[in-house]
Image (cartoon, rainbow, N blue to C red; front, side, top):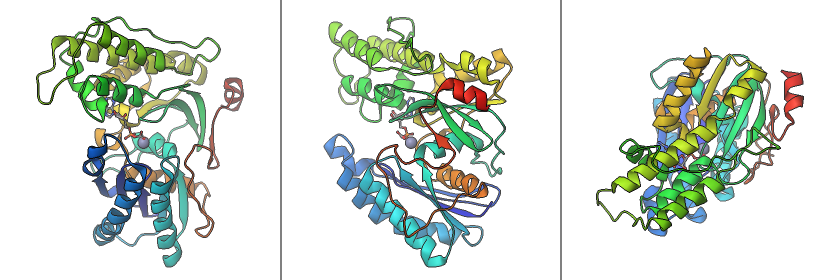
Length: 360
Ligand code: KG4
Ligand code: ZN
């Protein structure tokens, strides 16, 4: 693999990283835009693009000054995400790669999350990808199970409506807990009783590996309203009822995310099971996945918490693996895509399970 500069600008974090030829992290830089968006109560796309434009030159300059050697390749997120934000990163990456005559690889943001569990922030090289990895990606925009096998990525199931992280954010918003909601619910859940509030689990009959979180989210919001739970005001101490709901809701999301795992494992006989994306920072999910692994005698692996949310380390490594597999993009033709329509070779979606079984 080549020493790689990774660039990630799909949403509201400007991220730049350098990985050496063994996938060892030399530098992991992140510039958060939370303060810029806070007055508006959510991410403002135009503002996100402008903030990336300000941050990127500075971050890349710092990366070049501290990299362990000359940059040999560039990897950038080209989709999915906010189109203006992505374009800033893609244009920066294409100009940098073309100007220096370096290879360029466009990376799908989810491809990045998928490999993040193989990475270390402790100075270790990236772990080689074993055969047959079952991988959960649960973030603010996505909740899917994938099979990673010999460089190919096949999606086995996905959410039909809200993503897990989005559901955490929505319930936290109703409770007045701020954005992003996942980390706050995680912290409050530790003080609550997960069996206090009964919430529905949705299993889709026709697609057992797909998720639906909208019923669960609506039930939690209905419970808040029916029980007259007031939104938490500023620095007020959250009530026992809020902590109980946080614990019950978190438990319901985590159990739903892991519900397909035993059946998927029986079909694909994985050598490794991983979970990544922002929701993989969740302490209950991390604990439950490890318990599942020891109960089923299958190795489980989670990214370091700092690599669960968006970062450029995972983008650089996804680019390294893709490039080692023969992928390269033309800097003069590369464009960004807002939706998941852009498909790098080896990354497939909406495949039928029987098709994937035949191939595995
Ligand atoms: O991967 P990510 O940074 O961005 C996307 O690609 O969407 O994920 C952000 C999501 C947010 O919805 C946030 O609430 C959730 O990850 N999240 C968590 C935790 N930390 C972040 N959800 C549950 N528990 C956490 N500890
Ligand atoms: Zn993400």
